[in-house]
Image (cartoon, rainbow, N blue to C red; front, side, top):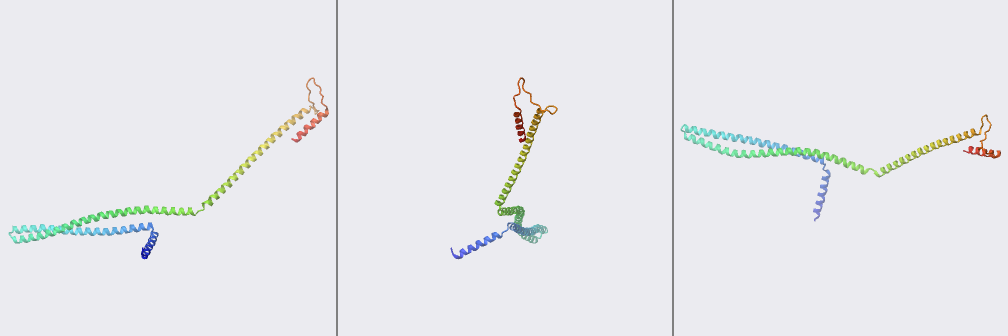
Length: 256
């Protein structure tokens, strides 16, 4: 490969890349529709001109037919009057009008076919333009959605999701720890309350037992009352032993 061919290829590649980057799909669609509409205007002008030519040829053809009929009548009239020479001239004019009419008929048929073809092309172009406008709106919507999606993806890529999720996890761990501390405090408070009620119940039992013991040990009128001995049994306990036992019992009650 020659040097100039390589340079030409490099330049062409760079130009194509620049063109591709410069092409805005939305603007390109607008431009395409504008060009199609310009073609439609030109085609309509062409159809109008073709129809005008067809009408002119049709008029000329009708005039030629009228001339043919006129010279035919003139020839008949000249023969009726006995003027054969005048009749011959009339038939010559008729022949000329007939030739002219035949040529006009060929031209008129061609122009009619051309006009019909142009009309079909005009209808097709109008249909394509309408379809192109619909597609343009759809493609514009897709382009807008694609741009929004691309922008969103760029924002997502730019976000520090790892750090954000780590922060959420730390905050969640702190909330869990705080909830655990609150639950522990509630359990401890409940346990202390139960212990206080248990202590009250225990103290109440001891007070009741002490009151019952005092009632047993006190006789009516304030005199001490000794526990009755079983029948046919004499008391052998000594006063010192009883006093010692009473002192021991009092100490136990004081320690409770």
